[in-house]
Image 1: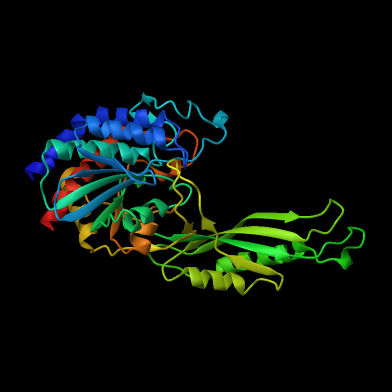
Image 2: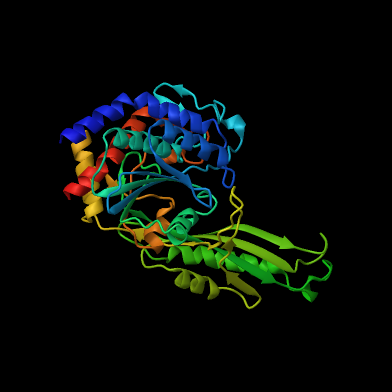
Length: 396
């Protein structure tokens, strides 16, 4: 209990420090595959915080370690962000990093460099407390999540052989304790027709008609997808439809449709592809695309764009350790819930079955939105939770 009180006091003492760490991150634009400068800034922050074991892997992920215990606990924050969108919709510069009215403002404060800043402070606290418990505590600041969620952690697990016993995703949860979310996948439908002069359309095979029929069948499919009591219902939606035609007075002979599919419990890549295949016309085919973009280090690590569903039970030891840490720190029960969107948990727990929970500063309604901002109080509480969790796990 003395450790919990000390952690709570130190997180409060370092409240402004956390805000300043975040402010410095936000001032550096860090789109997917362009994270190098913010990675180097966070590395500098960790070194200044006294963390000795800090390195950058081949993909560009930043990895820090505190403690040398036989078990592994990982905290993860992706440090790439989406772009700003229309800057006219922002009241402040998206990269101001302004600390004002008990908030830090700017792109990435919620999604999700706020979690990264709290991790830096938690690493500082654990270092200053000379943590020497059961865990090697890894703090991973990962890349390219916005482009391809989970790919960075597939690399860490499969190439770097960093295989945690437990992991914590620090995406925004509004300080709730999350234990899962729906999976997702992308599908592409290619349609082939026959071109003809627009004055005689009956001579051709118009891909607009077959694509429109497919889109309407997808709308019907959405209504009958599986539901899950905790994760909610699966969903499917066409998000892009383009055609190719020899001219504006010719029947188009090629079409492309992109499909966003959210997968609830019990749905798989195979079942989702089969559902779409069953509603396609003879001149259409469906496939799952491959992600193969070069990281800022020049490394390409390919991944199929299928991101499995995951959840862990509420009575799981990791969830219960989170509940214990939350109660000890804040004297109130944790709010247990799930994310609406997808996280790196699709790789850690979804594919590799490593138990995950989520706890992060900020409200997800600000993710990818203008005027993004995070309360400094959230940074303080997230910091305390991350530093306290190893002790709570040891008690469990």
